[in-house]
Length: 214
Image (cartoon, rainbow, N blue to C red; front, side, top):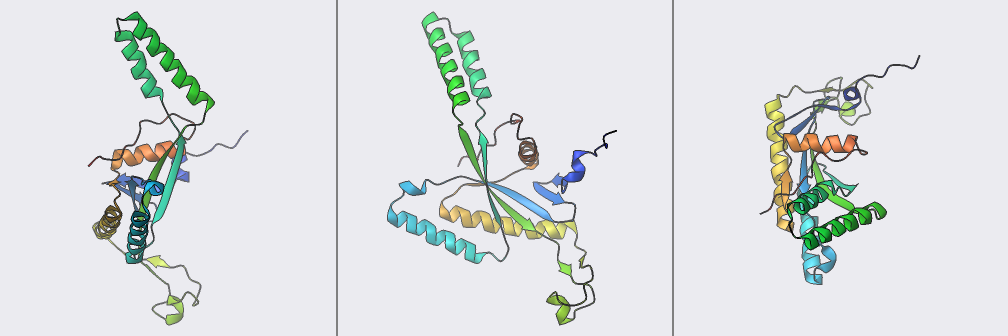
């Protein structure tokens, strides 16, 4: 008999999603920020230099690591086609109805024949529990060359962790805003939607994540 597999959750490092924060099974926290893009090639040389220097300065202010993620996915146009069909059913002019039908079929066939991709940009802000090496504060232990005993995380309350990751998130958002980017911190529903889409790449997206407008 084939070996029975366990639930998918046991293969995912996420313990829960709460207050816009991804809580991992090891106690670490993650915030996911969705960021707008800039058409860098259309900027003047002076603008490009200003963006580059501002971005470099932003990175130099960070004393923690961040992860930049570009998520590419085939464009889902089912919602748009549904709206076109609804508009066609409401149209009384037969000529316009025929034109809407032809346009709908053109869009459908074009997307089927051409891989139209959508790109979404994310920044992941981490906070990992402070780890104290086993065996006390011997300098060799701090350097990682002491006794090879399992390190244990310090006891931090969830409130302390949230305070730390909130400060980091604000720092990243402010730094990216200075470059001219719009940044949105994903809430619980948006995080669940994002991970659903990531872990189910063959299915249609639940809905489309959108950057907040100013």
